[in-house]
Length: 635
Image (tube, rainbow, N blue to C red; front, side, top):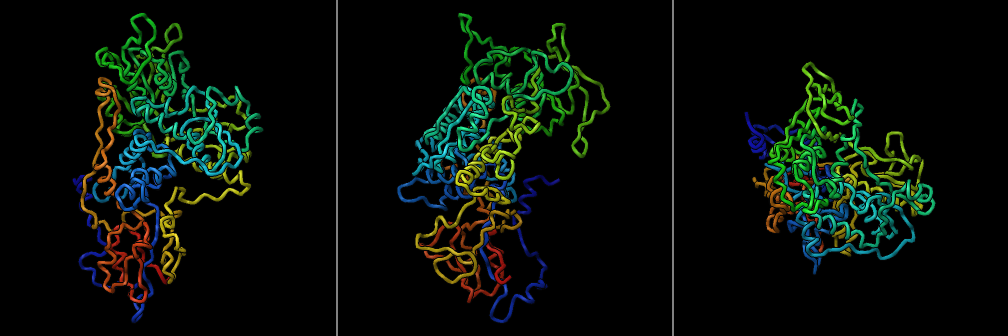
């Protein structure tokens, strides 16, 4: 059986026409009309699949073009800063995302049709690290609007919204119930996944824009909903989901049954110096894996100083006692072990720490001792039907002993004091533009809508900021585009004396026959000329095993160096935008395609067509690697 690499290799030399295709297609009968053509090339910008998969909406192709040297920075600006500015238009956390984002952009990367995806997350991590080392800051707004916005929740969504609003000149006050900002960035992820200095640096860069922060203040308890509604011109709710969901099974409310998010919060707060010997974690997603690895990291460590006082846990402690203590950590899931929602590398890390993983079992009951504490969990075998429903199947029930049961099956919000916003499911329902239904000055984003990725919360923050800005200006909320991302604008790089016009024009100061369809069309690999691209292996980052990190300290993923980051960016195929490869000019038999003069060109505006010469032969479109040229003029 052919493996994935062989399959990709066999399809790499993509051909629109095969051997033996000698009969003209029907379109030729009416396209060629003596010395003129019915169809000629048009230049169509589309959204690449990587950007379409990015919840934060980053212009991935754009900042990769900067790293690879296709988009040159202005005089006196390094390419690192230029890439940082382009990337952070959508996402102010490149360093953090480089460590923790599961990179859905890479899942859809068209480069997979050649050999392997582009290491987008690795290049993003390099840009984030370079920005922190160089001390890049965000430019403060030139003018203040005098409008005040309350942001409830200092996690990634709230911080991203504050960032976007400050750039627009609106005053922002963040209300955070915990002692420090960061939300899931700080309290929901083990601190060995992301260097604390990266988290601190990227948060502080936003605060330096002039954001007011009130920590230790819970809206709905310390400050009322009515007070917030009265004192601010607009409100953004990014309160997240702070409470782990507990299943409705007997015994699940025992004192030693906790939610996964609470477990990780205690760990990151330094209040979890030791854990019991037998732990059962119920879940299967990333949170459940984090819980198991944290439990193994702490292990049988006493957590006490020589004088008996508690010892604050740090990432640099050597806790090999976990491996030697005979501690038993079991992860269970209703899904098969091969289909856990957690990333495969995370699952393998858990296995390397001797975590037992059991799939296709459902919890029936938490078994209690005479004091009402959990002593184990009873499970039954289960499967999922084609429509996704979980059903019990034939088989013996099993009991797994436990001193601690952790439910990592999702989170819900604490809506106490915020009943006016509760949609009845411990969540806030958004309308168009993330405006709260029935509350026009209120907007919402992040996990409080539906728990998802950190990048999703960042994307929500940006969308809400645009809606809030329109609301504060008294303008109607614009309808969001079908492909709602931070799209590249070809006009930004055009010469200052140019007057771009879409459509077929003859003026030299215009984008000839250019059309931007990025807001409604995604370009797929079958629209590219894949034979142009040589097989170039991906440059993978060095990833350490958790057992090494526990013994030696440090973080898991080592960033690429500059040369590696540039080389990896050059693997990008610039799907949907000109790659400046010259194929269209080289292969045009009529010399109808010509290069734009250097003093007029810009990224995406590299060639034009002399329609007095074009005969509509389609060759330029056939050999365009990026799928930027389409035969359509005349329709």
